[in-house]
Length: 231
Figure 1 (cartoon, rainbow, N blue to C red):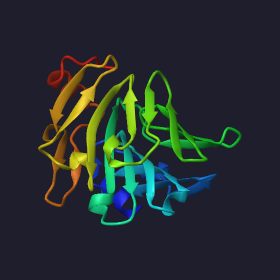
Figure 2: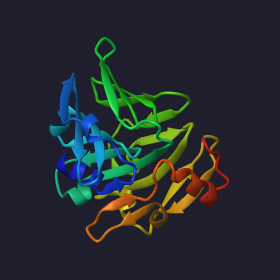
Figure 3: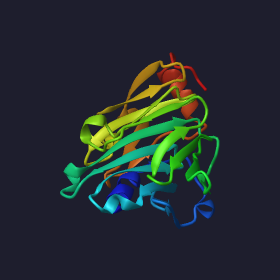
Figure 4: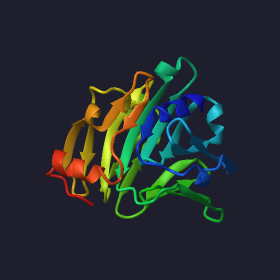
């Protein structure tokens, strides 16, 4: 998990979360472990969903949330050099009306419900730590196999806000490259390609800082991508 949180903590934000509502938590149910952790370095709260049997062959898929609206899909392809055996797919979701990430177990249904800062509810099957659905009209498709050819193995369509797809990369966070581009998609399927350097500030220490707060981001998108439908 250290490499996974290392990827997450590369991404900071001007969107301030509250450390008092982000206690250090580790809980387990069926085959699912959840962890919540606060980072002073990035002023963000992180929440992960992890399959407990992932240690068997180190082939597994993790799901992570952070209070800047990030939803990361982390893949492990087995033992070996992490630069070749791990990968990440990053999505950022807007708007972000809530300040905290919440979760609850549904023991009878063997499900975990995670409420993101967007207000969307992500439902997981606790027997497999597998994402089942996202609330509202959004559709999610999760690949059966964890392998590099499926770009993380999670695709989200018909999201009813703005969905920024940061892409997929083996060995590091895809938005860590300033010269690459991410693709913003609106609820009716229109897209806008944005260079990462327009969205993130890159420091000499290797930090990646999202430039916009919840208040300033709508104006940026309206000017930069006027063809998109604002939520």
